[in-house]
Image (cartoon, rainbow, N blue to C red):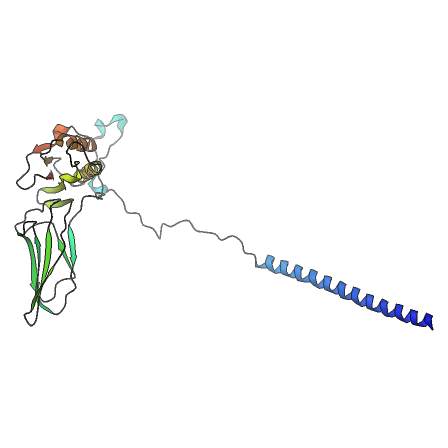
Length: 279
């Protein structure tokens, strides 16, 4: 009886052990398959490196900085080694400190008006420039830096502005603006270009040294000269104890002798400013 029972227990233990081993083997086999399938799926889904087209010629347009039509060929016989030299002219001056026209733009947001009037005034309250019209004003009023008589604004001097609105019921209201000044700008003239610069941008308050911005301004004046000059003439209206320092700085950028820059006395009201004429 004990032998039969022992055999039964042994048989049952063997069956359970076999089942456990089979289960263990099945789990291990399944795990291997899952890992292999996962690896194969990852391998199959792996994509080759993306080919990036580095040719942006159709997307990016780099404008020429030289007007080739404005370049005059020199006489080959006078050139060294038979080389032909071309004068280099910028297609447009690269300016940071000297403003081009329009000097200022004023935005207006008025509608349903019968008429309007926009005025720019000197620091003494005198009228300098008037814009006016019927109906609604334009969205932007561009000021070219000139007065009603065609005179130029004075760089560094304070100006103010105001806008007068008149509705269809003849009600009038004045909107005063803030005080502003323009340190440096250039204006187109029939005979050339007028460049105005406030003395405070060129010389220190004690009048003993040049300001750090003087070098940049001299370089920009040279760019204007190379681009706009037709006769090769440049003159300066200046009255400052260190005027010679700035004239020398300009001459260095222009690569000419300081004496080639015509020096004149400033006109009335421009004592604290410098005016350059490029022809």
